[in-house]
Amino acid sequence: MSAQELTAEEISNRWPNIGRFLRIDDSVDDDYPRFWRVENRLDPAVRAASYEEWADFYEWQLARRADELAADRVKRHLVSEWTESMAYSCRRSAAFARGENPGTWVPLSVRRPDLDAERQAIVAEIIAELDSPNQLAMTG
Figure 1: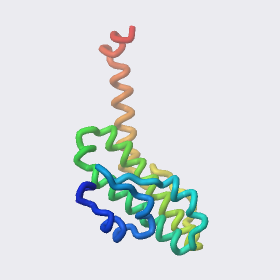
Figure 2: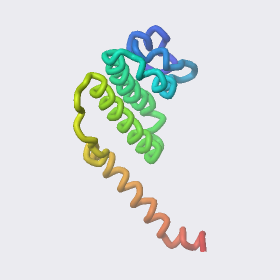
Figure 3: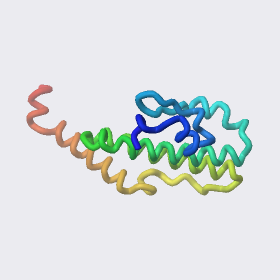
Figure 4: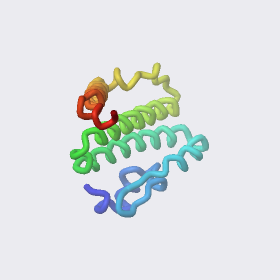
């Protein structure tokens, strides 16, 4: 479902705890900073549920942008890494809110070796391009 098709009622039903922090216009945008300013005042169970919803929302946003991101490998990768980091952080925050110990922080490279390999491939391509004779001639 595209953002244009998503109604306020559907947002409220899908993400009841964070719906008021989401804006609908031509797209669906979030106001996570406003949530973050009030989250410490929420009941722990509501805070945990809210963080789970944030993780789901960010993953939904990534899926919603699949067509847009398909044409730009680097942008797709950056958005994928950002989404993974936000979802992971939100789920850890949900665990803390439930009184659980989420364990030690697991680096992105360990959690998602596929994203790490893609980052390394992109960097290698950029470096190879910078080192190419054509690039050196343009800068020299």
